[in-house]
Image (tube, rainbow, N blue to C red; front, side, top):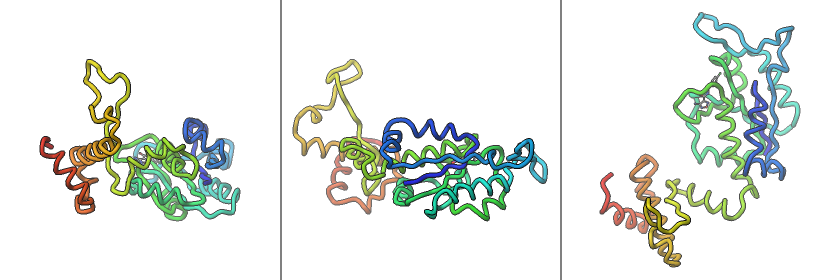
Length: 248
Ligand SMILES: Nc1nonc1C(=O)NCc1ccc(Cl)cc1
């Protein structure tokens, strides 16, 4: 998958995509990441990319023309069509379902704003969709872009090894349940012992326990993610059994 990122800080994107699974995927050619800096397309001595807002008020607004020229250069670099996705708190909240949709695309262009905003006429003319990574205000769109690059790259065929993809699947199964607790050495510790079932060697019982913990945690921490009507009979039974001993 090719991802072009329009950002005043291309070095940030390069760094965040050079580590771990994403870095490995990029090395393997599963991710083709390109940074484009609007400042390289700004005219005049000062190469302005921003200016004061009409109507007054604090801060600066990113100008149309440098973004327009920058986006045109990015599009000209590869014939593959791509949606232009703008990261901002005004966007649609990012979900794993959306990540899966994006991961299936051959290419996307991520637009990272800075300052107080981007001229609305550029957004109206060039942006396909706006996405938010959460209801909080960051200093720019780059962290949102890095989140999308990471989440989408993990889903590229061959990006994850068997263990990693099993972990991914368990978490983002069809119902999107929260992950179960994890334990490793030591078995006994002053902060508690590892649940016996995990040391029993009984793989059916272990899988049952993990599923039950995911169901219980989702019910307790994120009931909004739990659509009980979509649960299998077995899952409903597991959850009912787990609920008995627990107050939400
Ligand atoms: N929340 C979020 N989810 O995606 N992005 C954000 C975010 O806060 N961006 C900050 C931002 C976005 C555009 C401009 Cl011009 C300036 C600052």
